[in-house]
Length: 259
Image (tube, rainbow, N blue to C red; front, top):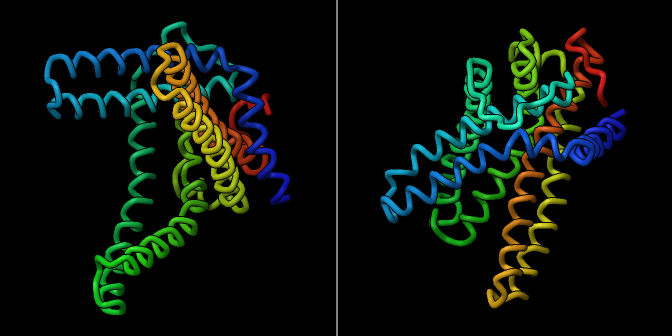
């Protein structure tokens, strides 16, 4: 069951993306274009100033919520997105707020553990800034994250539920998702490793081009953007697949007719 669920989530994310890549492009292209235009305009107007940084971050958050909601609804409800998806309403706002809460549940414990590990490193190794202390802190924080991520994946099931306007709270999501957290986490990590291999290949390709070929550089840039878009779709796909399985097991849920 555990292995089958992990494989199902991993392969299902790829199948969903390859089957509807054009749909995902419709979902995200306008947000990417908007951010690119604002970034260029901000650079031209303010140079290296950080004045444009906060608006860009806020727009990225809005884009993340809008893209995720639209992709969830497409995968689970077969809802076709508009040709230009710049929608950001109450549903997307609720999604972003819950996404932010889940992120805090990961960042705050990791930061606290890192601080405590730093104190122990200082007392055990004599200096919190030495190489040994740094490795110790990284290992401790990594172990904590590996333990936390499966739990947070279970809590994250509220996100696709929010996209579908389903009344699923954090407590219910966590309590009714036994056995889903680790497969979702492993599928997400597996996808990240696959993307990392492609990213490494792109960096090698860019190095071979050496910046001498304009066409080659443009090609690498386009491939990098496509890889970033695919990464977003795959990670949302894991969460969508987890919610699909959750609904199969524990709730009537939405009309989840796509696997």
